[in-house]
Structures are given as C-alpha cells and as structure tokens.
Image (cartoon, rainbow, N blue to C red; front, side, top):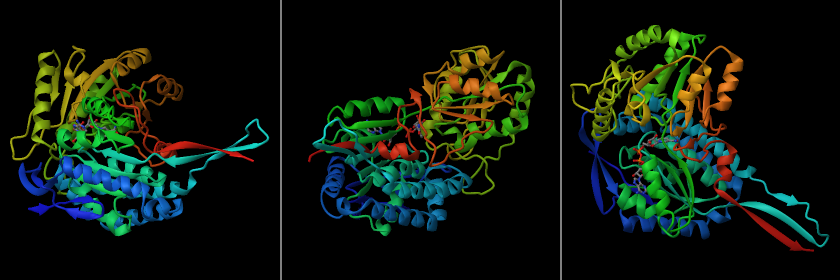
Length: 476
Ligand code: NAD
C-alpha cells in the first residue's frame, strides 16, 4: 500500500495515527493516510504563525513570493500525470477529468503568482495640510483552509494561490476522503523552496482535526469549502478566534432549456453538467427545467444518451463515468432516490447501484412534474441524479429556477439574447452560464448566494480577501 505523509514546518511525517484510504473503484484499501489530531494541528498552526511573523517569509518582496508560486506551477505541470493518477485512484474521478483539471490548477497558481506584486494601496486626498495619509493592503495572517474531498487540488489552489500572493501563511486540511493528491502536493511546495511553515498540509477527521484547526486562537481567516451543515459548525468554531470567513458551499443548480435553444448543444452540456465527476460537483446542473413543448423529445434523447454512458474503471481513458467517492455517499443517494419516488417522482432512467465491486451508481433521471417535495429536487444529492421539471413560459421558468435555498450556478440555453439578459439578471445565483456550462477561469470570480455561501474565489478580488487595509497617518 502506498504511504502518504503530513507536511508540517517544512518536514514530512507519518502522524501519530493513520487510517486506510479506499479505492472507490474496488472498495479496497490502497493507501495509508496520516491522521492529524490536536497535537499535530497545534504544531502546524504554531509553524504557520511563526512563519508569518518571523524568518524569511515576511522579508520576501511580493515579486519574490510570486516567483515561488511560478516554480510551484512548473512542478505541478512536471508531475501532472502522477498527480492526476493519484486523484483518480483516491476519489474515483475519471482520469480524463483529473488530467484536464491539473492543467488548469497550474494556470491558477500562475495567475496568482502574477497577482502578488499588483496589490496597490492609495494616497488619500485628506482635508489637512499638515498630514499625509495612505492605505496599504496587508496580509490577514494565518489561514486555515478546509477542503472537501472532490477536486482537492483545484479547490485548494483557489485558496492557497491568493493567500500566498497576499503574504499569508496556511494550514491546509485535506479532506479525510481522497486526501492523497493534496498531501502529495506538499512535495511541490518543498521543491519550489517555500520557507518552512509557510504552507502546512495535514488531513484528519472533521471533529478531531477540522474543529481543532478552525477554532484555534492563532487562526486569522478560515477559507472553507464543503457542505452547509459543516459550515454552520465552522462558524461556531470561529467564535473562538473571531477569524474572518469565506464559505463556498453546496448547490442545486438549475439548467433551463427553452424550445428555441440549440438542442444538440444543450443535451451534451446537460449530460456533462450532471454526470461529470459522477455528479459530485458543487456546480452540478442537477435540476433540469424544460419548456413543456420539448419535454418529451428532449427526455427521450437524454435517456438514450445517459444509458449509453461508458461506466467503468476511472483509470481507463475511455471511461466516461466512474464510481462515487465513498460507500456512505452511495448509500445516501440510494435513500434520497427512493424517498423521491415515494414522494411521487417518476423514475425515467437508472435509480440503482451497479452490481459490481466499487461504489458505482447508474446515471439517473427522475421526472418531478408530479411533486415539488421530492428530495432529489430540494436537496443536494452530490451524485449522478438529474431531476426534471417542465415550465410554460419565462416567468414560470424563473419561479421554478429560483425555488431553491441554494444559489450557486445556473445554466440557460436559448437563442433569444434579450431573454438571456433578463433571466441572468433575475436568477439568484453567483454564476450564470449562457449556452455553455461549467466554464471556469482564474480571472473570473466563482461563488454563490444563500445556502451556497458568500465567498468569491478567482480573480484579483480573491487576493484582496486575504488582506486587510492598513491606514497610515504621517504628521508632516
Ligand atoms: P463536508 O462539509 O462534509 O466536508 C468538508 C470539509 O470539512 C472536510 O475536510 C471535512 O473533514 C471538514 N469538516 C467536517 N466537519 C468539520 C468541523 N466540525 N470543523 C471543521 N471542518 C470540518 O463536505 P464534503 O462531503 O467533503 O464535500 C461536499 C460538499 O462540498 C458539497 O456540499 C459540495 O457542494 C461542496 N462543495 C462546494 C464547492 C464550492 O466551490 N462552492 C466546491 C466543491 C464542493
């Protein structure tokens, strides 16, 4: 079995205790993972706190910090095939997806490398002749980054990149599910030459590691991505340190298709929106809203496509959908699908676990036109389950799309430009994709409304999130 380590204060260690990580494609243990508890969390925070206040890091110029990030991006690119394979092995996400995602993980680090020396202050035109006043953005301090299991390399990059560009130091908690690629990334920080303690990467369980980290008195900012219930716990923890928070939470994103849309393009986008990563994506387009006149034809075509998706080993390059990450997740989906059917929803396709080893679940489509109470319509399932509703006109589409406590993303397919503008203005979500889905860029902000959280990752604004403005008064 492969062994992974913690990275604390520039050193690799096995942890006082370890646990096994299961390969979701087989359900069998394949790696030994260190488990951080209170003592190790404290050590990591102490290292990050010391590195923020003393030693080389606070003496580096912003340009020098940027150069270290460029080196890290090069290391990621050089090791991309290995990192992609680790992520596939540990999470079950197919190799096609992990390989393509690694390429833009390196791009995100390069983008933030370039941001490091572009943080500007201002000289204020103050109404006093004997004073000069200026402001300067300053790094917020020690950051606790809490990462969910899906896309750990990407979801950590959108926190680590801007935090380091701003001059912060970090303790990163990889999720206990699928932590191997993020633990391995520590080698990249080490090779790039980041001073000891600037980046610390550990993993462990929510209560014994995540809670200790997010309530630690020396944490200044918490960057959390995960589910809303965990976020509530993290907010409570932060009462202990009054750390600022950015929250990237779940989603139940509508995917609206009007009869005038390019239906070939819409169908391909919908398939990818819900079945990529086996639906385990915060921006999964999990609520399909179809204009009534095209419902029957579209559903027939969608069903045919869903039933020919090639399911198999995530390491095989021809596989189109892999297993779910954990058995727990599959059991949750089984329960939610059966509760949806009990609530009056109609199964169109799938709705079962595959009869093979590993945590596979069939691509599933459920008609919810008979019920608004089906859990597959109201809850984030984080699995390959698409709920379908029909709508009559624009107002009906908007009403149904906004009928959710989440507000992360929305897909809209129409050839009517004025309608696209109207809906994108009124939809309650942080991201709207018009005639496309899931496009991302380091330059574009990413985040949600309501139960989907309130942080924004991506873009220069994310770097500013890791700073506080300092105002200096000079008596001349
Ligand atoms: P989760 O909330 O169960 O866990 C997230 C992280 O929080 C893990 O590292 C976990 O160990 C940690 N944690 C658990 N309890 C904690 C506690 N008491 N204190 C501190 N940390 C604690 O989420 P998950 O199942 O790993 O990921 C799926 C969720 O993440 C979904 O809701 C998904 O939509 C969301 N997500 C959001 C985004 C986004 O950018 N908006 C991206 C990816 C995933």
